[in-house]
Image (tube, rainbow, N blue to C red; front, side, top):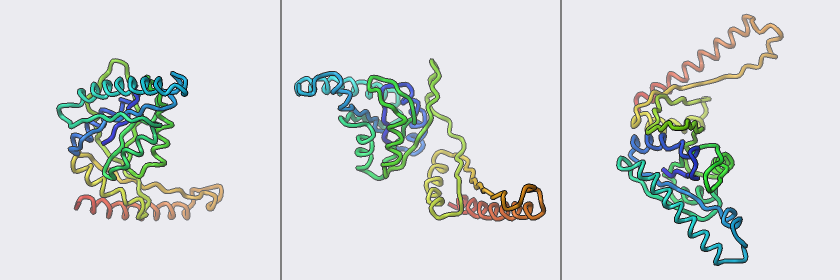
Length: 231
């Protein structure tokens, strides 16, 4: 699991979920911080290469110290290492995760804080649209003074639409439900074009259509639930 951090409490809001996933799935964790060249350039004249190198080295040292501190909070129950990269945050995350298709990226979806001043919403959006790795996103809810060691993930809701594409998530659900002991809820939602039934939708024809949709959905979901139980 690669965990991008920017030094803020909002970004660290993903850590309780990382603890739960890494412990349950027995996965090593890499804490990642990217030093944005634009941030470095804002501190000095770009023509002064020595200044750029010095400031970059200082920021890399600070980032390393910060990540090791976070890593100690995750250890000894988890195997943790740290990585400091120089580059635009989204590109650094995508590149490092892309080395191994088995890497899961876990990060918060928004927030702007920390000395790196990432705009997490923008970074998460870029990663979401560009990475080929699996991605775990959370909305951070930071309460001052409240420390959550490990998130309690109790249920998994799986939206399905009877397509082969939607069903490609099911093998991953099997792994999660087995390892982390979660209840799985299969969900199917339908949209009915009310215009086809006139102004008064409470007609026998409308009720028959809705009943048929429900029965077909129940039958489909029951078959998928049976398959999951067998797996």
